[in-house]
Amino acid sequence: MMTRFWTNSPTWGFRDAFSQLNRLRDQMDLLSEVMLRGRPVRSPATTGVFPSINLTEDPDRYYVRAELPGMKADALDIQVVGRNLTISGERKIESIGEEARYHRREREAGKFSRVLGLPGEIDAERVEAQLINGMLQIVIPKAAAAKPKQISIK
Amino acid sequence: MADTKELRVRDKQEVTTSTEQTRPGRVFTPAVDIFETERNITLLADMPGVTSQGLQIDLRDGVLTLSGEVKPFEGADEAEVLIEFETGTYYRQFTLSETIDQSKIQAKFVDGVLRLVLPKVEKAIPRKITIQTV
Image (cartoon, rainbow over all chains, first blue to last red; front, side, top):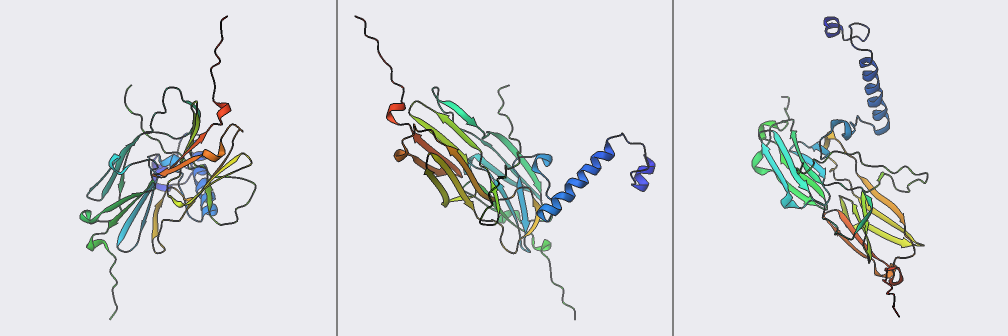
């Protein structure tokens, strides 16, 4: 184990037979994703928590987006503590009645809760959230200290 | 266990057809529930991010086509930090049997969910036949 720690080389150390293959597969997956999409994309099924989130930023704000079809605003709970944003709620699907028969059933209902740690300090007082057509959009202003400052050279 | 189960993440299903799209961008298959009652067949499709203007429902030759346009949400000067899902047009087709009264179809789009009610043609509604006893 010490040789693995110091050298990080696959040829040293005494791991089990499959860990090297797993690492190789993960790296090849990442590589093929980069070539396909132009940037690394982790499949949400591996990171695992519902809902899938897109986090983007500009110099003043963070933007968090999630797809939550069929959710009403009052079934959704959004909280901010420090730098952590928590999105939780429950999606309900109405029951269809006794005599109805399903031909196809692909939509799912259930509870969810996800905590997202934001990369920098934020201004919790001015967070705004909107739920439009099943798309949740949260705008989180950055704290003044966390905004990039242009330094001019004299 | 009476607890509500937890929702799990599923990858969005991307359409892989042999025909090419004329417009650039991804195409996804929306998740759909279809159920039938005595009088109607109801279809519910999850299409988050679509607006009512961008939604098209087409029915011809017994084929129902759902298509929902999704505009990209990210502004031009936003930098990506973590991207877990892509957005793109939703598209799915269904073949309808002839028992649908196509002139009476109703559509509602609320919270990103499309609800299509397809009424059955009168003669397809099961009728009880009473047996007369002499």
